[in-house]
Image (cartoon, rainbow over all chains, first blue to last red):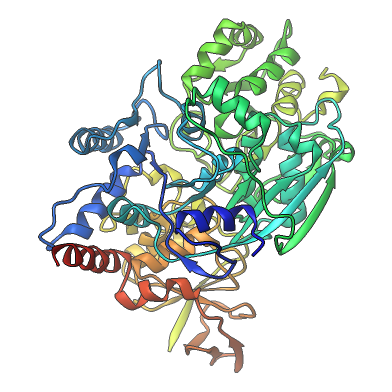
Length: 430
Length: 168
C-alpha cells in the first residue's frame, strides 16, 4: 500500500508492513526531549509508579534528551530549584544527552538536537514542546506532547494511542527573491492555511524551491508548521540532509534517504510559487494574520528580537549583520539577539557577526527561549511594539498583554532596526 | 444543567489560559491560581470560589493553540470547568484528556454568558435560547485513556500488565 512519509515512519516504528491515516498505533520512540518542564515530567513519572511496587526507571536513558533553555540562567529561586531537581534526576537515571547552562554545549533544544546529531531521518521524535515539529526538517516524524504523555513515554518507550495523521502535501517551485527568506515562506503558508488549517495533520514539504533550501531554512519552516496547527512538518531527507548530518552534526553511522510513495494519498495538495513571495509579517495577535510589509503603513517598533529556535542560526545572524554593518540602530529601538545555541554563538563570534551587531547597537543575549515566551528578559512595556523573528505573537506572549508582537524574517527585523519602523529590506533600510 | 461562566472567541492560546510567566509553577495542585491570569476579573472569581465545579467556558475554534504547556489543562481541571469549543488544538486536547479535564467538541455552539446548557453525549441543549447543537465524539484513539480515568492510571495499568507478563 502506498504511504506518505509519516505513514512509512509509523509503520517502521510499530513493526508493521504498512499503516494508514486514521489507524491507531503505538510507535516506538527514538528520541524523547524535554526542557525545564522535565520538572513536571519527573513528577508525573513518579506518579505513574506510585503504589505499583515497581522501581521508577526510564525505559532507555540513551533515548532521553534534556536541555535547559527556557529560563537560563535561572531568573528565580523557583526555577533554580526545578533545574536542580532535573540535574539530580539526570544523574540518578544516567541520562547522557543532558545540556546544562554551559557556553560549550548549551543552547535551545530545537538547535541542540539537530546540531548534535540526535535526530535521524525515519525516526519518531517527541518533545514536551510544541515546536518539536522542527526536527521534521531532518526527515523525522517529530511532534510535541504534554508532560504526562512524556512521562508515559519515559516509562514505556512508546507513544500510546496515536492516530496516524492525514498529510497535506506542500509543493514549492520557483526561486526566492533577494531578502525573501524561508520565514516568509512559512508565514505565507500559515496565512493561507489559517492557525487551525492543518490541525491533527502533517505538512509534507516538496518541490525544487525547498530542495534548494538549507537545513537551517528547513528548520525554520518545520518549526513553525505547528502555527498552522500541524502535528508535524516533514521534509524528505536528501543530499542536503546527508551533508548537514555528516558535516555539521557529526553523524558517523548510516543515514537513510527516503521519500513518500509516489501513489501516497494526501488530504490536500498546496502549490506555492516562491518567486511571487515578498517580505511578510504576522500582525498581532495571531500568527495567521499575515500581511506584506509594504502594505503595513508606518508601524513604529520599540524592541527588535533576532534569534530563537525559529531564526537564531548562523545564516540568520549573517543576514542581520550584513544589513546592519557600519550602521546604527535607530534611537528609541532596542535590539536583542539570541543565537540558537552556543555553538552558533561561537561561530558568529569568530566570523565577526556579533561584533558588527554590537557596534550597530544590538545587545547579544545568551541562547534561550525566555524572551519569546515572556518568562525571562526582554519583556515589553504597556502599549509597546516588538518586531521579532520568533514564532508566536499571541496576546501576552512577550510578557505583557498590553503590548503587541509582529513576527518577521531576520532581514525585515534588521532593516527595521535601522529605521525604527517595520521596513521592507528590499528598500535598503534607511 | 451547567451555566456558561465565560465566553471566549477563536484561537484562545495557552498563553491566555496560563501565561508563560507562571510556567515555573508546575504542580497540578499549584497551577489553578493562575488560570486566565490576564483576564483578572474571571481569575478573581475562580480564586474566590464563586465558580461552581461543572461550570462551562464556551469558546470558538482552535481553543488551546500554541504552547504544549500542560499547566493550561491542569489549571482548568483544578476548578473542574467544562470547556465547550467549536474545536480544540491537538496538544491541548490530548493534555486535557490525559488529565481528565472535560472537553466538548461542538462545532455549531452558540451560547452567551449566563446561559444554562444541558450537555448530553450527542448534543448540547441551550435551555436559555432553546436551541440544540450537535456534539462530535472525541478522537477514538483517546477512548482507552478516558475509560481508565486519565493517562497516569492508563500507563500504570499498562506497566503492571507488562511486568505481569514478564513474570510468567
